[in-house]
Image (cartoon, rainbow, N blue to C red; front, top):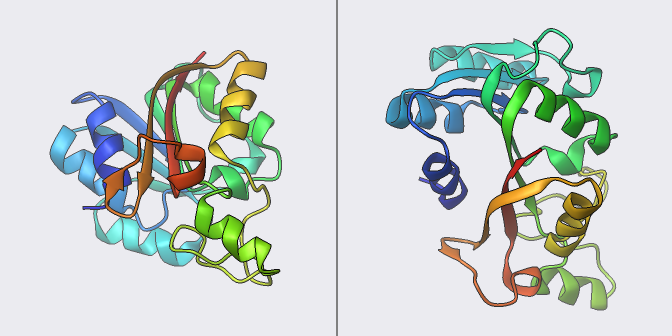
Length: 191
């Protein structure tokens, strides 16, 4: 199992309700249903990914999270997950407000654009391509390039409480200088 999925599964309490924004092929939701017996819903824009979710028996809606979550009442879910989708939305503030309106807690995971191998590639004059940033500049879905420190500052500015965090690189946790060494940041947030 991917390490980021393991961390998220550890944060989610058994039998909780979960909404995964940008759930992809549903691998994380499937793990949460199997291991934590959660009531799971997903939102995905890619039709091929939705078919994979349906094959796994998951409830996934074809929607654009940028359009808002107006179909969901306040506090509909215990957790809303945005793992790998934050850097791809045009208006993160709008998506965050909606996610924290419908969910009691928000789990956010994103690639750390200032990890040392990315910095090295930029120093050599290239746009970084790494395991956590596997796209060339011309086909990347990423719109926002943020670091772990940028995200912490954002949370402070928006008065979001960071309840837990984890910093990952390949198959291990990073404790020392995560903004330099971690490929991915994960945060558990509340209002």
